[in-house]
Length: 465
Ligand SMILES: Cc1cc2nc3c(=O)[nH]c(=O)nc-3n(C[C@H](O)[C@H](O)[C@H](O)COP(=O)(O)O)c2cc1C
Ligand SMILES: [Mn+2]
Image 1 (cartoon, rainbow, N blue to C red):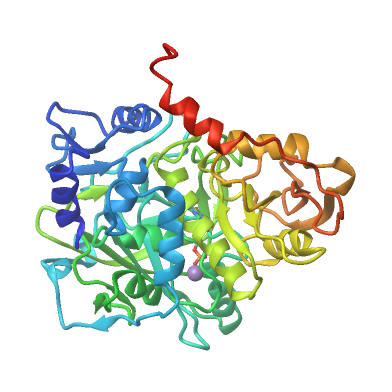
Image 2 (cartoon, helix red, strand yellow):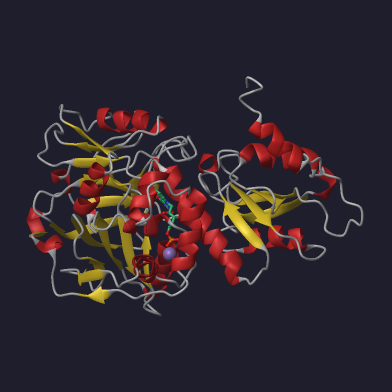
C-alpha cells in the first residue's frame, strides 16, 4: 500500500473529502485542516493549492477508523484493539527488502536543480517561525558504529531552497547518532521520505526502543518485508514508492535558527527561534505529480495526538510485556495527553505489590522514562479507556498517601508545565487506584440480583421506559 492506494482506500470507505476550491498554503490550508480535525472530520485532499500544481493531503490520522485502515483492520476497531494488534504483530520483526528502483526515482534533482520551494509547504500558525516541510516526513539515519537504521519523525523547517532546519530533541535516536558522528568529526548522512505506505509516518512517530529498526517493525506490522531503494547520494534505504525523497547531511557542529512551531502541547516551547542542526540537501527525488502530506500538530486533539496515542500506547504495552510482568490487561495513553503524559494501565493483581510493580515498571520503560508524568494503575474490572470508570476508581479506590512521587526523571523540553529554562528534568506520580491485593477484607461491591435484572429487562416496555 502506498499513499495513493491509501487515498483510494479512504475514499472508498467514505473517509476522505476532496477540496476543489483553491486554498492558500499560507495559514489557510492548515486552518481548514485544524478545524476539520477538531471536529473529527475526514482526511482532506486539497486539489488546488495557490501557486502549486500538487495535491496536498492532511488529517489522515484524526480518527481511529483511519488508523485502523492504515493497520489493515476493520474500520470500527477501537484504539485499544489497534494497540493490542500492534503488540501482537510486532513480536517477530521482518527486515526490509532492497529493490533496484521504484517510483520515487521518477524525477531526480541534483546540484542547481535542488529547490525545496518546489513543494506546496504550508505555514501552519501565525506565530510559527516559517513553513514546515516536515510534519509527516520521516528521517532515516544510520548508527556509524553498529549500522542500526533508525526512522524518526522530526519536524523540518523550510529554511531556503537547499536547507531544512531540524529539532532532534536530546536523547532521540537521531540525536544519539549525531553525537557519534560529532565524535568521529564527520557529517551525518540522512534520507527523508514523505509518503509511501502511511505506516512509515506511524513508525517514525512511534517511540520504539533504541537499537531497534522501525523498518523491521513496519515489516512485522505488514507481515512481509517493506521494499526500499538506496539513495542517489547516500547509502541509506527509503521506501521505493515514497512521494518525495530528500537526501542530505547534517554537520554536527553547524547550526541555523529554527522554530518556533505550534507544538502538540498546544504551546510554543521556545520564544523566537533557536540555533539548531540543519540538513544540507544534496539531492531530491520524487514521483511524477508528487502528493504532499502534512499534519497540523497544535493543541489536542488532532491528527498528531491520535498517532501518538496509538504508537506510544502500543510501545509502552509492548515494553511491559517484554519485561515479563504478568497480569497486564490493557494499556491506554489518552490522545488528550498526546499519548505520552498520562498512562492508564489495567492489571489483574496476583500478589501483594503487583500494582506498584506495574507503576514503577511503566516509568522505567524507554517509552515511560521520557516525559511520562502520571501513571494510573487500575484493577482489571476497569477498562482504562473508559475515563468515567477510571475517575470512579480514582475517587473510591485511590488513596493520596499511597501515591508515589518520583522527583527526578527525563523530561521533554516541550512540557509547558515546567518553567521554560527548567525543562530537562520532570517529576512523576504513580497513582495506584487498585484495591490493595493484601487486604483480607475487601470493600463489598454493590451488585444487582441477576434474576431480577432479567425479569425487569423483560418488563421494560411494559414499564413505559
Ligand atoms: C508531527 C510530529 C512532529 C514531531 N516533531 C519532532 C521533533 O521536531 N523533534 C523530535 O525530537 N521529535 C519529534 N516528534 C516525536 C518523534 O517522532 C518521536 O519521539 C519518535 O519516537 C522519534 O523517533 P526515535 O524514537 O527513533 O528517535 C514529532 C512527532 C510528530 C508526530
Ligand atoms: Mn527509533
